[in-house]
Amino acid sequence: MATDELVKATGIAHHGAERLPSVEIDSFNIEMKDEDGFLGDRASKGAFRDILDRWRKPLRKTGEDPFGKEPSEEISKKTLDAILVGDDTEASAVVHSAIEDFAQELAYVTRRFLKTKAWAKTERIVVGGGFRDSRLGELAIARTEIILKSEDFKIDMMPIRHHPDEAGLLGALHLAPSWIFEAYDSILAVDIGGTNIRCGLVETNWRKAKDLSKAKVVKSELWRHADDEPTREGAVKRLTKMLKGLIAEAEEEGFKLAPFIGIACPGVINADGSIEKGAQNLPGNWESSKFNLPASLIEGIPEIGEHDTAILMHNDGVVQGLSEVPFMQDVERWGVLTIGTGLGNARFTNRRKESAKDRDSTENGKKKAKENNKENNKENNKENNKDSAKSD
Image 1 (tube, one colour):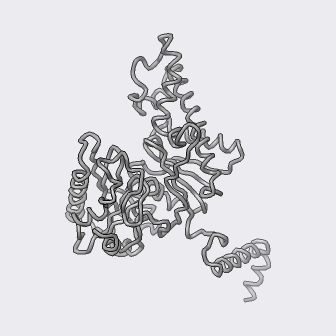
Image 2: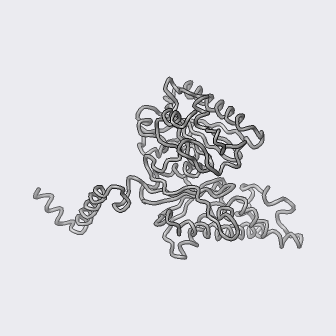
Image 3: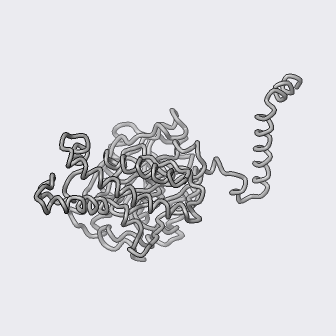
C-alpha cells in the first residue's frame, strides 16, 4: 500500500506523531552513548542481573552463596522479592546491594537524560517496563529519586501506575482523536515486544471520566512469539487473527467498538508507519522498506463495524508513558523510562498546560501571559478583588 493511501486510510494523524491530543512528545527513543556503549544498557533488566551476579561472586568462591548454583538470570523477581523480606539476612543483603548499585546506574543514566535539551525542566519521571513490576524494582526507583534529589535535581520518580502489561494497552487510548470517545465505548490496542505480542479490548469509560482515568482493559490475549520463532508474515497473520477474535468478542458482549486500533511497537516509527530502526528483536525484518505493519493490518481488517479501520502506531515507550496522562496534570513536563531488554524513554509536555514561552503562536503566548498576570494580581490583592466583585 502506498504511503498516501495509508494516511488516507487511517485518517487520524501520522504514525509516530510529535503532537497528540493531550501532549507534545519532545523526544523518544534517544540512544545516548558513553565510553562503555549505549547508556540504556547500564539500566536494563540484564544489567540488574549482571550486578546481582557480581555480588554473588565472592560468596560463590567460599561456597557461601545463598542462591546456590542457580544462574542469576533465572532467579525470578518473585523469589527476589520474597528474599527482601525473608529471614535469610545474607541473601537479603546481596539483593539490597544489587538494588543500590542498580539505582546508582539508573541515576547516572537519568542524570544524562535530564541534562539534554529535550529533557530540560522535567518535573517528574514515571518508570515502567517489566522490572518495575516487583518490590525490588520499586525500591530501585525510590533509591534513584533519593540519589538525584541529594544532587539537587528537582525531580520526582515513581513506578508507573498500571501494571506494565496493561499500561502498554491503556496508553493507546491517548493516540485516538476525541470523536472516538463520543461515539464509541472501546478500542482495540496492541503492544508488541521482543518476546510477546499482547492485544486488548480497552473500555474507555469516557462517560465516567473524560480524562480516561477510569479506562480499563476488559479482555486481552497474549502470544509469546519468541517461543514459536515465526516469520514476519506469520507474525502479522497471527496478530490479525488475535484482533479479529477480540472484535468478535466485543460484538458478542455488546461493546460499541471504535473502528480504531492503537499500536505500541519498538523502534523509531516513521510518519508512514514504517520502522526506521530499533525493531531488531521482532520476528523477521520489520525495518524493511517493503514492510508496513499498519498497512498490512488494514488489508487484513479493512473494516470494524462497517466503518473503515483507522490505525495509529507509535513507539512502545511512548505508549506506555501515555497511560499516565490523566495523572500528570499537576505538572507540565514529564517523562517515562521503561526498564526492559533495553531502556525505553520519552519526554512529554502537556498541551493543556503549555506556558507562554512554549507556545508556537506569539499571540496566544501573550494572551496566556496576561491571564497569568491577572491570576497573580488576584492572589496578591485577594481582598480588593472581593470588594471589586461585590461592587460589580
